[in-house]
Image (cartoon, rainbow, N blue to C red; front, side, top):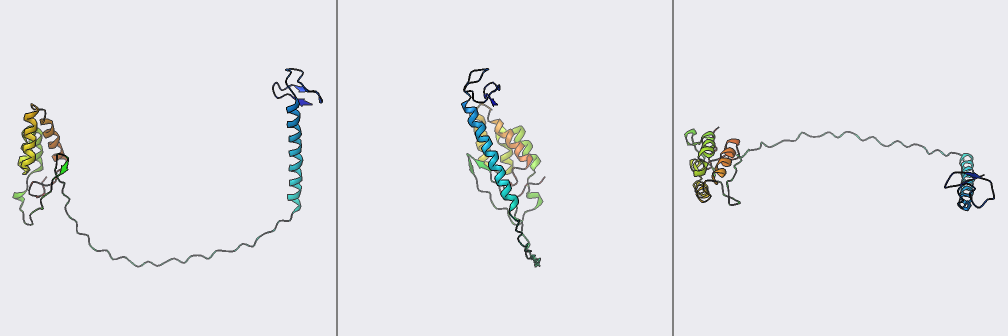
Length: 178
């Protein structure tokens, strides 16, 4: 029996066209013949495999690595340098002055005062004048005047940045106190 590829109807052997749909059965016969030939080849290969004796290779153990004794590493003490953030004016970082070696607590500026001045009077550059960044304070004041007060937004953002710790030193390089 030959099965039609298109409709699946089983036709008698020797017919060239399907009795149901009329399509050619020549392709179906070739497919059946190839499938039978592949089955016969698979059986021959299976017989050859079962007839060959299995040769076992001796298993060689790999040498076990000996643990390496490590010498303790002597670490040098790390001297931590304070990290200072340079103010950015017109897209370029301004040099941060080095902190004086001897400064007292009275020399330190308050981060809280600078931040609040920046938030409430930032349009006049008050926070930056307080910290000693005179040029930056002037830029904030000029920006507010030229933009009819809209430049005060810069001072507001600057005051928030001072309070969050983005500005860590005053104009002389002395760290801000909390």
